[in-house]
Length: 67
Image 1: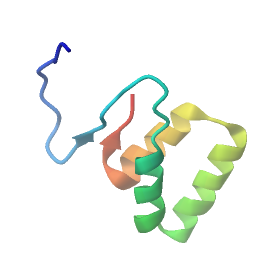
Image 2 (image 1 turned 180 degrees about the vertical axis):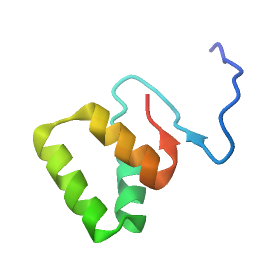
Image 3 (image 1 turned 90 degrees about the vertical axis):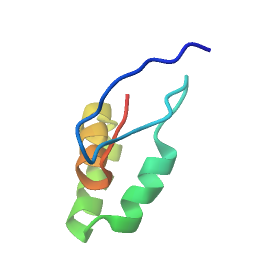
């Protein structure tokens, strides 16, 4: 396995990326800390199947950058 070395902005987490990863753990963490408004927004994003909006909202609320 080959590892890359990189620097993230302070306070940012990076996911363990692998083929087929859908961010389930990040979504579970999201629902633990999100406001009711953010949860409603996520529900709409999931209905639209908008992957880019999903990743952005996860990053905004949980602080994890999904790939």
